[in-house]
Length: 374
Image (cartoon, rainbow, N blue to C red; front, side, top):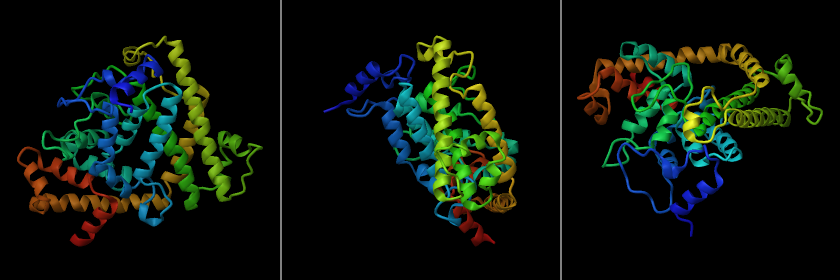
């Protein structure tokens, strides 16, 4: 029978010296006794999977509205893909898979309904409160909003998982008193950042092709993608199999490049401990220079031909109308909020509480409430 102590011992024997060892975690805000069979990072992963905010990801938009077809990615399926890529990279680099998986599973909990369009609206509505950022909201969820324990608010996750949330790379840098803003997070957290990018770049192409908003002919206009499309081992003929092969090739090429480049940077910078990782002068987990150019070209192609497509910009306007209307409706009468959120008004600003409630909604629930008030 394998117990927690045995797992922690195996980590010491098998993982790299600069990995994040669960036995050396910086702990939780509210101290707890260790579990007999699960490490601290495994417990974090399980708490995330069983929390309400995680289940709601199933009905939150990634790029396309989920109810348009059963085939498009949702925020949940995106999260699962990020976790899979993160575990693969962590395993090969001899890092802590459990920590990488936990950070991957938690990284998008704070996303609003309707994807980034919803986040942009709440950011504007909360301009006087410092704005809205989904990383900050993810931390607020696991530290405060989730209600699974009588003993403490939130999920009481470990320092390392919370650090992965705070230092997840987005347009706006998040600063938090519990974490040194001048240090990098663990390599496991850095892996999740880049696995997130690998996942959405590849699956947005997949969903874009499925929707008909982008085509193989368009992709062939990219020199970098054309090199993959012209792979003699793959016959691209606009079929489902060609589409699947293309996505598989993109994920494979990007992931291998990240593994090799990260390993090179670890060796080149003489990284021996997790303290070396945090104090590094450069980002250790990254693409090679040539792959960075390729990824930038791919992002530009998606931005100009998919994210700016009229169908998606129309959806953005629709989602703005819904979230703005809901915010105004609750703002006029806070008695319309659930009892739990009304109690929060005793200690929190009204606009923050309303944003907490709306941000937690799924697309379909927000649409349902909007239909009732119109």
